Image (tube, rainbow, N blue to C red):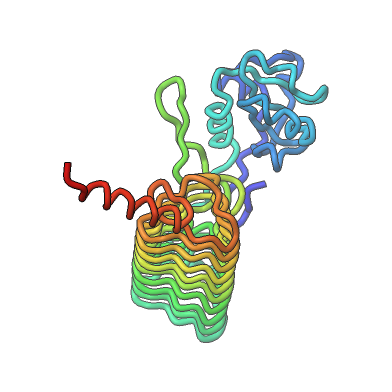
Length: 334
């Protein structure tokens, strides 16, 4: 379920209410008064949740999850387990988004610069204009720069250095972490789907977890997960102006040069390296110790230990040979 440190529980809601809200057809009219308390994607669904399924290939996951209710498109209703109430709707993901907005809400920041219930250990230094949200926790010896905002429920470890004009929300941060000026940690990831009246934002209900010894450059953005967490592994070093999208998992001791862009749900192994302006498409896996050349565009998985470059990216020797061949062909006369 969404972490209660960061999200308020607005439930429960009846399935009849959710059907009306989303325009879904409730297959079992007798289940209209049945209550659900939260939304969940299939991997986290359970007896009190409502989830969604948009494609037949996830039928096994739905059978194993056994949620209380599921939004399904017309024609796939039979995929629901016997004890799962079906809500038939043309766009299940859009219905899920509306249900998530009904059942969950991010916690408010409070009215005071330092919330009364915030916990600051000895030796914490706050710069002018710093804001510390309700129930936030900051460890011994950590320095918070001027005009930096730490959101509700955020936990920051010991001996961290948070520069001015940083915003951190929906995040759990380890010890000895450095975050440079203007970085944005825990903003909602980019997720939208079609609705009856236009695009609908899909609530981002996950967190950001930053492990010990990580460095994050100026004006870098790390989005919180859509439901799972975005994770930055121990001792990883991230340059300025890097974008890391929702649900990304970065391993330990990775390096990312400036302007690297990592799309959603990418998995990166330990020790991977990215040159400047490298880009990675969503749901790609980068193997342990892999290297991505500057300005490369990665569209598919990279095996462990390999070096890739080019657009679309391929093994570096292949790319260099192709580049050399094209240069020779272009210089030929006639």
